[in-house]
Image 1 (cartoon, helix red, strand yellow):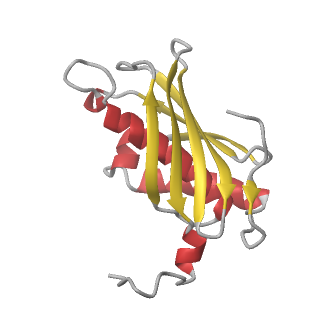
Image 2 (image 1 turned 180 degrees about the horizontal axis):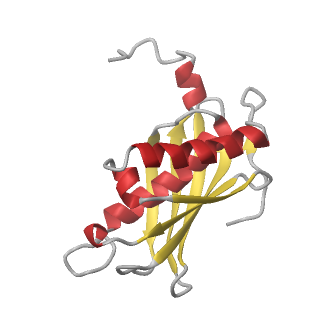
Length: 171
């Protein structure tokens, strides 16, 4: 990941550091309260927030149910972990859940049962309508890069204010 600050338009305000840290705690508590949904089952550990770089670090341990039929981490679970880490960073820094519109994941190496995976999600750009984030997944067990990803999300702050296209139905 590059070491640059988040770019954002003047109409988008980033959340203050105390809010960002509060989000980390909220995400942890939500996981505890919902152990049977996919985020709860993946058991993410929110270990670090870097306000200057706009990053949130999330750890995962590969579990048996996450393996594909050849015994390695399923690509869909890898994508979900990365989407979760990048989305958590977006939530923390933008202040709203922002639905993912597009993900581009590059799979580089495999992970196996018990591997400890570190996902660092980072907000790259926050615009009035869209937010762009990246995620890098590394295997803390063997030091390998597992995957990289780039995600685009709808800006949830705009959606929360009801600023949606007048030609679409909100159902």
